[in-house]
Length: 247
Image 1 (tube, rainbow, N blue to C red):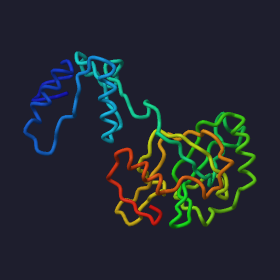
Image 2: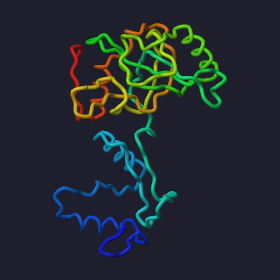
Image 3: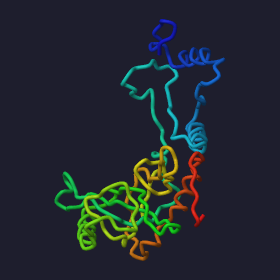
Image 4: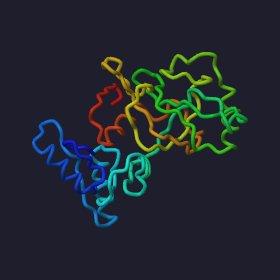
């Protein structure tokens, strides 16, 4: 955008890219991003799939002739992210360990979402992986408020490992199936969390959405921590360590 005292924002992207490439050509610790000049939708899709397969969030499609306009991308700069492409290849079964009261339009239902966990058989505990608030219709919100209200306990159950505090704790009993965009590292969830790390992180479902109640499953039959970690690794994320007796 600014080089050697000159404003480059009015130049088209193609010219700015060439200047950038020339500037960092001999740098040791910095490199320009990979680009592909696409002439068809299939080429865009191919480059997108390649980028996601390498563990990136997505790509940015830019008009080669467009100048840089701060805060106003319009149609010259479009993000294409993994979340737009669909979701995880498989759904996840999670146990409900708490719920939140509704706010705004949901206040009348007394239900705004659930805190959910996956089962760690090595420690016999439920470890949180997502707060699920979307995907419920009005009938389901009323159903869950009534259903979970009967299982409220005064304190966090001993078999639940959570850094979060829902409005109400419940005994791990009900299992729901959820979909999500991906699995990401999280400083607030405890699934696969390694407390020995300098900055401990767990795993979480990104943009989780309720699919259905799994009344055919018991809480300990939910997806396991080890399975969540394997799904995380399958996305191409190799920078997190986790070990458990069940793997």
